[in-house]
Image (cartoon, rainbow, N blue to C red):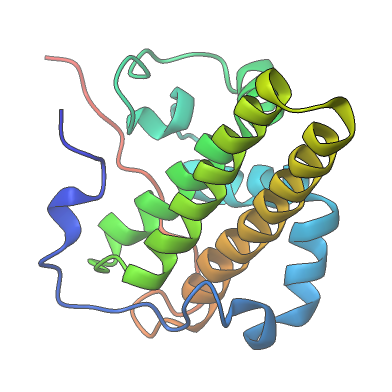
Length: 177
C-alpha cells in the first residue's frame, strides 16, 4: 500500500513555508501548537469538517479509518490517542486540497522523529534505566517540536495561501448511492 502522500510528489505547488522555518513565520501560533497541540489539531480539524462535515478518523486518509463516526467523542479520542496521525491527516488534507508537493526537509524531520521514538523503545529494552529515560525524553521533545512545526506550517499555509484567502477548505461530503 503506498504512503498517503506518495501521489502528491508531482503536484505543482509548494508550501508557503517549510516545517523548519514555520516557527519563525508564525511564532505565536507555534507556541500555541507546542504547548497545546491537542487544541491546535482540534481547531484545525473542526475548520476542515465545517458545520455539517462527516467525521472519519484521520479524515479517512489512513487504511481502516473510513467509517463515519460521531465527531464528539471520536475526534477527541483520535487527538489524545493518535496525536501524530491526527496532525498528519490535517496536513495531508491541506496538501491534497491545495495540490502541494511534499517538502523533502519536512519528510526528513518527520522520519527522524519516528526513528528517535523507535530508538527510545530499543533503549528501554537494552540500556540501563538512566540512559533509556534520557533517550525517551529526547525523542519525546523532538516529536513535540516537529508536531508544533507541522501544525504551524499547516495553519500558516491556510492563512497565507492566495487560493484559500485565509479560509480553511472544507471536506467534501461523500454521498452514498
